[in-house]
Length: 398
Image 1 (cartoon, rainbow, N blue to C red):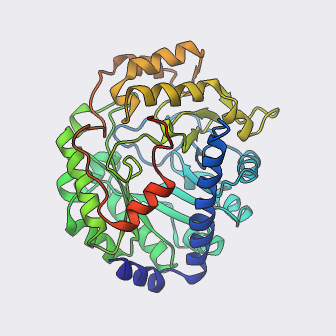
Image 2 (cartoon, rainbow, N blue to C red):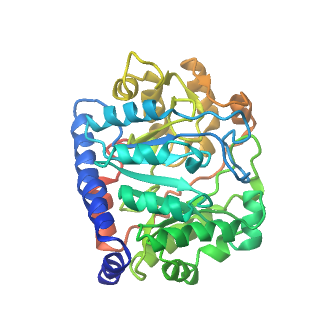
């Protein structure tokens, strides 16, 4: 499998882009995690991976979206983005996840990529705005991989994304990237309406035929102002998704991402382990994208992002208290604890709708990816090694 995957990467990806990926994301990303581990010994928590929602607006209206996509547009200006990225780079960071809304609606996003050739950016996108011209810009920058969301077949995609002809427009973006030799990812939120279509070998083979190099499966989380609880998976179905990923890693020449389990198959939360936090489109520093409360904001000119995150009692409490009660998702399993921590730190609601607390209060505890006693360890040596070395619990659950 490794040789087949390596052959795909060498023959399908522009060699300059492949080198950027290997160096900026691979080597420098590993160094970033090592620096993070070194900081932990001094009880300093600054995540090696930062996720930034650069805009709230979106051209789609997806089921279960927690972002205020229809509210007045807010973007993180290029100057602020550049300052935040530069500050993080000083402390070894090289990887940044770019979210929205729809990130490609940001008017200066491509210029930001150009300004940081020594970084690597993963853009969470619906792909519809990746025109041939945008794809050429991404190739020229060389340091970007689009993670394009596909939620199922044509009917499911239209229903899940709230627009018509969604799949065809998204696949056009995938094809534009393929023509430019870009490393392409596809993300899918697995729920009741698409689990049979997407959690199967034929779907992965279809992705390979389309020129996709990695797939990211995450399970649907009923959160936000209009959660659809009927779409949520059962615990057995979550195990099915996990088992499928583990088995396919050793079988097909496509990388499969699942950052919610360690090498032994134990659940983990990237927020609780401290490897990632989120900056919202209004600049608020949040524990993760679906916990929309904050006490810090990157527009505070007196402190850079490093100081904001390392000095945040709110984030520290969230990491520690979450890890004490579950290895899974605190939002799904322990919504009452979120309310308690928000009140304790007088955190503000970071949504435009200003109903985040009511949404938390309306939630009832439910299962997440944590399923003690039913762990499914990694089978492939490469994934096992990588997770054990660079993406595990970091003593959060000790």
